[in-house]
Image (tube, rainbow, N blue to C red; front, side, top):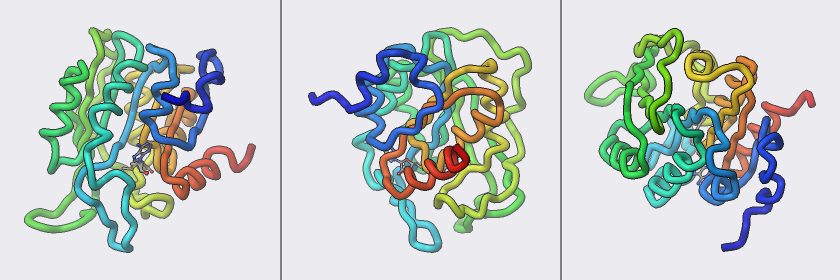
Amino acid sequence: MKPHPIQNACGDVGKLANRLIHGDCIEVMQSLPTGSMDFILTDPPYLVKYQSRDGRSIMNDDNDRWLLPAFEEMHRVLKDNSFCISFYGWHKVDRFMDAWKRVGFRPVGHFTFIKHYASSQSFTQFAHENAYLLIKGNPDRPQKAPRDVMPWGKYTGNKLHPTQKPVEPLGALIEAYTVPGALVLDPFSGSASTAVAARSKGRAFFAIEKDPAYYGIAKKRLFADA
Ligand SMILES: C[S@@+](CC[C@H](N)C(=O)[O-])C[C@H]1O[C@@H](n2cnc3c(N)ncnc32)[C@H](O)[C@@H]1O
């Protein structure tokens, strides 16, 4: 297979800090050294053919071909005895759980984020989000374990991305499961909310986004003042 163009640059782990890469996360992660990431916080496609009210869609939300290889690479590049937190499409929790377990992750916690508004309505009003806490190996328990129910924070208005996550709860998770200076990976970065949260907590980020439109938005958001 042809190496990804960043392959050489990524030989040195120090060079991985605060990078935003435009590309397919599976290919990009294949170019990363094993055990090079301290923590993963990610919000992958939900496998529901998502369409926002204003007609925006998400790349790869209509298929699960990426699911196993992407989590296989996430497990490989994550340091031993470390944490990965993944949002997921609740309709397809079986597919996500199957992939996580097959690659070697163990679920050890489940977060519920309470919204003060409903993002849509069907048989219920949708007023929460969920994410699983997964482990590779046997990490130490955090000094102060966070509650597994927390506020979602302010509605972002989804101005930068149709499923834009608020920075506050992401920051709380990063703070709980990493130490200052840690390198946080988000392979499905969207508008770079995880990277912004990592930076706000004094951690470094490595973010990957495939859609050129969202990569452009993320680049502006992260580096506009640089
Ligand atoms: C649910 S969204 C993430 C939104 C993000 N949390 C935010 O706050 O903006 C998932 C993102 O993964 C991207 N994506 C889908 N397949 C990908 C792939 N193979 N490699 C990299 N990014 C991908 C999509 O373009 C989309 O922006």
